[in-house]
Length: 426
Ligand SMILES: [Zn+2]
Image (cartoon, rainbow, N blue to C red; front, side, top):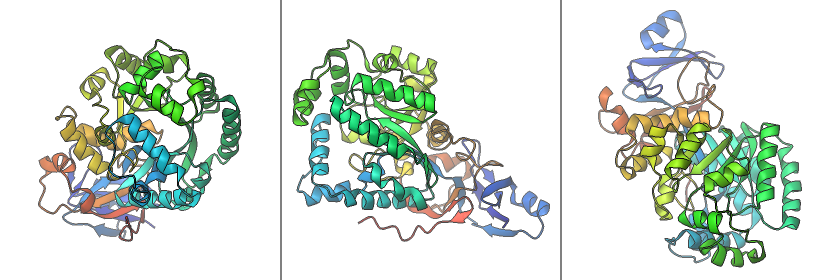
């Protein structure tokens, strides 16, 4: 059924908002965009839903998350792990300890909570990482589009052989619900060189999307270059990998990844906190996408991504929340707000909005479907009703002020209103 949706302002992208803007939805897609007067006159008799003083805005893209860890704060409390450590390796060790005590069913419940919280936060697409592959069926009835990256990591050949078989079996599904399956080789410090190389070759030949955590911490740089530091001396022995510490590569993370065949644009890189100028140039040259997760970086105390340099060099940027193991919400609105403050305005509000919409969509190969309100794309949008009046020239500033998540009053995925008031986070 056709329907015209309108509000005080329609914000399609980081272009100026349109007062009295509207879209015509037909069969889940946007059939036309214009002013409400134009659409009414061109489509007589079509129902109009007018959200009056609200804003009509595209759904956002969470380019990097781990929704299976949504219940992590509860798990931590239940196992008595206490406050979050401030050191990267301590944080990983705590994550491992908590996960060791979980029942597999807990991942499924946690992932379902993550999907609901994402929808309620106005997210339409995700780049979600799943370590517990058996939980992938939870996406069967989810409205979220995007990529579900099956995580893999390992150092010893026998385990890798078993993981490789399990991964191949799971990847036969290709698509679950509205998400495409891809692979996430976890990071350069947690996967053997041969296995990493084989995954990148497989993704490129099989046209599978991929994502890799890269240059997240100084501990990672030290490990990749010199096979030393906390990862070698504390993480590896803790998980029984002390016999698999690789020989020093002498390379920084980007060079190392390039040597394994990992610099192709469908491999979405994540974090990029510790990139030097030469590495930034390489990523720009290779047309790589980088998902920034500033709240997670702040929580783990790993440093701040060089966003000014990345932006000026032309590295394509998206935003992710990472998981609730290192962040306090799954809202990309909250991530934009934090990023604006954390990067001291080096990324202005329209740029952050663009990263959270078109940027994320393109990073996940979804640019023809979502990321802006244009004819031919999905009729996927959200309605925000600000608590105080927001003028046209204040809208992008409003987007990076805190509170947008609370101002969401309705969410539509492919023309269908979603029930968001039943979201339970406790
Ligand atoms: Zn992550």
